[in-house]
Image (tube, rainbow, N blue to C red):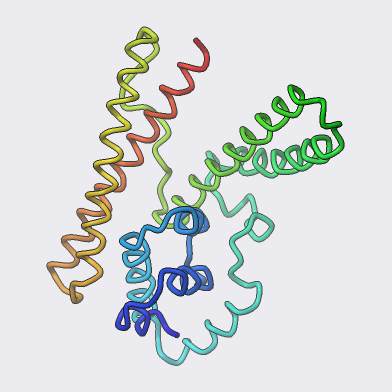
Length: 234
């Protein structure tokens, strides 16, 4: 089944995710998001972007591209990305996330060998593994964003929270959680609408608004991470 056929027939969520996963222009971060949550609006939006990309390709090259993507040419896991392909700001994080993966693997072996009675030690090791994979996911979020937009993902909070009291930090984070939740719902509706619109000025304008909203959402998430970090350090 092609993307166009899936959209026309309103195929199942699982079929749509499979189509996205097998596409050479997929984003590994978005793919993880689609697999974790059944966000059909996001799926429709991303598949429409891929369909638009396919329609821009010269017809004579299409079979060749499809043949290559069935192999390992467009794999997005870290062994196929070289440091020199990344901007300077992402090179060190890229190297560290690979090291973090092997460290998490080492800790997992230790965890597996622990006696059942070592509950506290198992909990501590588990927390370390979770933090390592959180770091890996964050680095890949930055890398995926750069490959898609050719610009760096925002990493600086919009506000300096260093002088906030613990109560102010907590209350601000809660307000941002609410804003993120509302923004995600708005984005999902916008993406569903964009998926139904024919190509043209109206759809292009809506897609521009969607990208702007996505950037605003990213900034909110950066601030939430900063607030959470400061709360942990208190």
